[in-house]
Amino acid sequence: MNLESKIEALLFWKGEPMPLKKLGEILKVSPGELIEAIASLKQNLAERGIVLIEKEDDITLGTNPEISSMIEELQKEELNKDLSKASLETLSIILYKNGASRADIDNIRGVNSSFTLRALSVRGLVERRLDEADQRRYVYKPSMELLAYMGIASLDELPEYGDINASIEATAKDLEEQLKAPDGSNA
Amino acid sequence: MNLESKIEALLFWKGEPMPLKKLGEILKVSPGELIEAIASLKQNLAERGIVLIEKEDDITLGTNPEISSMIEELQKEELNKDLSKASLETLSIILYKNGASRADIDNIRGVNSSFTLRALSVRGLVERRLDEADQRRYVYKPSMELLAYMGIASLDELPEYGDINASIEATAKDLEEQLKAPDGSNA
Amino acid sequence: METETAHNHYNVKTAAFQGPFALLLSLVEGRKLFINDVSLAEVTEDYIKHVNALGERDPAEVSSFIVVAATLILIKSKSLLPNLDLTDGEESDIVALEERLRQYQLYTRLAGNVKALFGKNMIFAPEGRKNDVLVFLPDEAITKESMMTFARDALGRIPKKVFLSEVEVKKVISIDEMIDKLTERITNSLNKINFKEFSGRAVSREEKVVVIVSFLAMLELTRQGIIHVTQENNFEDIIMEKPSGDESWDHIPGL
Image (cartoon, rainbow over all chains, first blue to last red; front, side):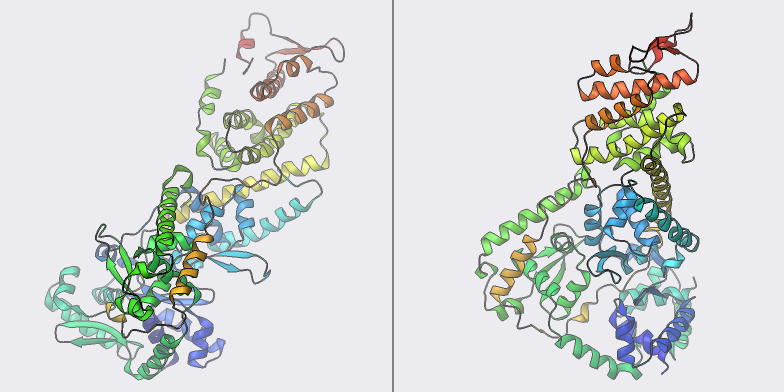
């Protein structure tokens, strides 16, 4: 049995997101081998009923989004598809920046986002994690659940993701310098 | 999306054996078409991590038998792991609230509890049932075995049950109302 | 008396705006304008009227609207009085406001993408499997006492008012403070114009806001040649004249 099939089997058995690191340990393979096998699995699943969702350190399997409406009808549990304007803004920041601190989000929206962030965490649409770059603060990341709700297998399937990501980086840098300028604090 | 992929998606989502008759009804296809598509799916899955298992009139997906020893090992490991703090906290809410919906638990904890609840269910500590009051959602109840293990015949034998139960009920109600309030359109 | 347009803009429900950028962006986009100093100057009066209508909302919340209002008034003043010298700090406040507003505009546009996809064609994880339960596997950590402690801790962590609306502010300033400061700032740079009559009358916050808005409107009308402003000597009252036979005097907002 090849590595790709083993990954497929493990993900199926687990039924929820698995960290790449854990997979590497179980299967006793290098990160390079793992990533190669995942890419191949993803490609082989392309036209099938099952899709592979990737998100930084985690992967999981889910149903092909094209069959969404049929499954929704079969599902007993009610889905909450409502998002307020505040939630949409906050999610768009977290998605297109691939994670943001509360300070980043507050700064962009010009309002305190802590309640929106709590509500989004409760719904499992965002995940709070310690920032790897600065262990004293948290970053909010898109969850697998969020990608699944949007029917995308990875962030780069977001419309305009590539363009936006490049321009966001540049703008953020500019703005940071502006805000650092003497007396340029409030605006 | 072809019929074969649709069958694969439905079986994956269901995660347990489905009668052929039921599949035919959901997919609105004739028995002949269904059997043909299943045969093709079975063939395509032959060398993969996920395989198609047929048993009389039911079919289901499962992991390739070649990897079953590895999965058994993992299963054992997972079940023998200590319960996480998140699991213990979730369990305490289910106990003191005398059964709670996922939404209640999520609201109180401030994070999504679906994976935690699954871990508790797998170990037989809680039972999931459709809510009698609202058939579109589930409630989680402590299992009989759990009460016996804790040496109590009923929940009110838990320390300070009356006090904590009242406080959880009030909090759950309060949080729910705040979510509904105009200013809480944050969700 | 207000012009019809001004009246309509005034009626936009301010309560619907979560923060200053949402309000400001809606005013700019409502006029189909791009974000720049010209468009910001154009919507300044409407913005201030909205802020004034916020009334007795949470002071911290109102304050974040006021911080933006202060920068807008600088932009507006500069557009009306090209000779007004702005400090470096003021210049960078203006640039930062434009950029933050553009950034906010970008994410609200992207929020449209999120809205378009969310809940439409979803990916489903496997539904909970019934035959998952194999055995009963408790844990030594589950005791009557530990369960009580965990339940108490979970309750203790909940913020008192979870969804109370609150606005981020770096420093809280009141609308009165802002208006006093700006009135001083602008009139000082216009040593040809005495503003005493205006500001002397204003006592309440509402009156002061009216003063600022009226003052800006007056300058606007001056620039457009609708009224004629003269002043005999420094520190004397501004004399506002309407060209004969014209009724535009009646149309200055707030007077």
